[in-house]
Image (cartoon, rainbow, N blue to C red; front, top):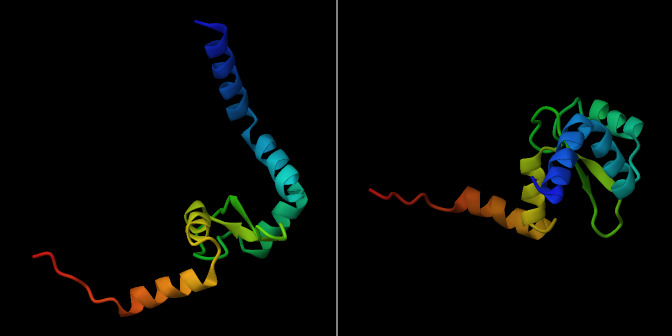
Length: 107
């Protein structure tokens, strides 16, 4: 096995063993969010996604302009906001589409 491959596997193994610590460090670096602040958000949200209420949200949602943390989301809701570019206009258009679009039968 080459050194590069051995290093990659060792790094992966270390990350899996220290995942919680690594995620806490990433939250602190990216959002200034301490483990205590993250726990407070979890408690305030009843350990549920701020949008869909799925249990144990892991993604930190933040304003991309101000960098202010808005809350904790599940991966699906975080990707939804990202796909909509955090645009209320786009999300409202999605709601209108779902509410008003006719269902097309493929039979």
